[in-house]
Length: 221
Ligand code: SIN
Ligand code: FE2
Image (cartoon, rainbow, N blue to C red):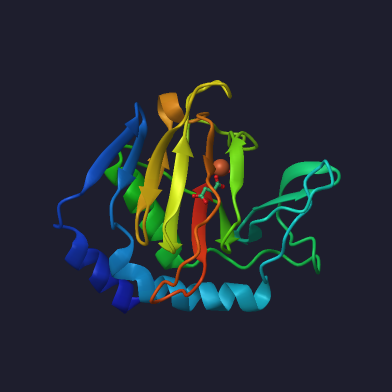
C-alpha cells in the first residue's frame, strides 16, 4: 500500500538535483537524500522497534558488539556464537522480522537507481544503533547470495566517520563524514570493499538525540 504522504514527497523530490560524491569506483554518497523523509522514517522505525527492539549481539568470538541492531524485511542479519547468517525470524522470540515499510523500500530503490544501480530490490534491512563510542570495525558485506546487488546505507542522527577502503583489508581506508540524511551506495567493483565506522563522537542531534541510526539495505537471497 502506497502512503499518499510519502508518494507526494517522492514526487516532489524527483526533480531535486543529486548531490553526489564519489568514494571509489562503484561507490557514491548521496548527500541529504533521505532528509525529506526523516519524519516518516522515524515514525515507521518506531513501529519496527516495538516489535523487534535493538539488542547488542554476540560475535562468533563471543564479544558483544558495541552497535545495537535489529532488522526488518524478509531476512535479518544476525550474529551469535555459531556465526553470521541471514535469518527470516528474530532469534529473540522466533517470529518473522517486521516487514520492510514501503517508505524504506522505495527510498532504498530510488537511491540505488540514482547511484547507477537500477532494479535494486532489497529483501533485508539491518538497522544499526550507535551510542557515543560505538564503532564498527573494517569488514566486507559478504553474507549475501547475490553480490550483483549493491548495498544502500542510510545515515540518521549524529554524524559519523565512515571508513571506506579497498578489496584488501590492508588497503588504507579513506574517511568520509556521514551526516543525517546522507545515503551511501556501493556495488559493482566496490561491492566487496572493506568498510567500517569510527567510534561515534558524543553530541546531540535535534531529531534523534545522542545516537546515530543506520539503515543498511541488502539483497540477501
Ligand atoms: C554496516 O556496515 O553495516 C554499517 C555501516 C554504517 O553504520 O554506516
Ligand atoms: Fe557493512
